[in-house]
Image (cartoon, rainbow, N blue to C red; front, side):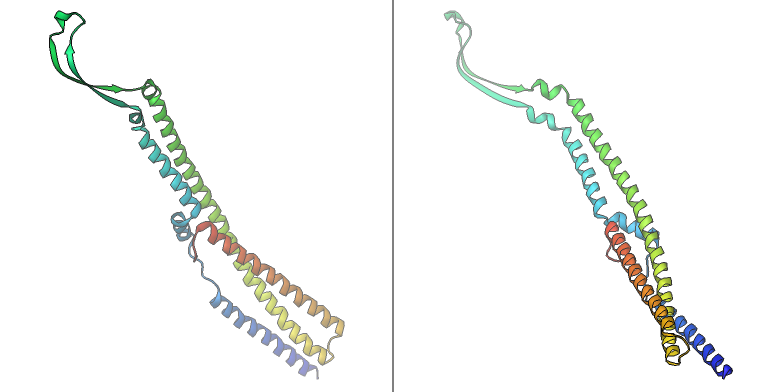
Length: 227
């Protein structure tokens, strides 16, 4: 009788090991593949909405700096004048010329000249500042991608472990049910095993949610639909 129980016990153990092995293979085959970190960073620098926004700011500052070189010309005024009649002073003997007269006058306000270099320098400073801001945002983006990428890998590994642990708990729960039917364990012992199984299932769902959230955050900060 003892030998028969030992055979049943070892058979159940082998069944557990075999099912976990098969489950692990299925889990590995169904796991989402993650692109290498270098590829993710490279693609993110091209598609990140945040980086594209600051790149637009940089381009706008450069355009404003270029326009500032010609901004002083908008204050220039050109006037033309033409006359017909006698020319000279008021003395009768001097009023000997009769004909046409024309001229052009260019008016440049002092404000267009004074401060011109300062305005150009200010535009250059704004452009340089936008470039430094772009590089700063780019560096911060890369740091966030590296951190979030490793968080995804960690949670993926934790999910695999938690899935195998839950599967083991499930098989143990099935075995304990058979043992309860055979009166090899008490109902309280079976209830404890059930409680452990449900606790494992709850922790598995929590880990799944954490992994999914980390994955979505990585997609959001990189601007990529597939990673």
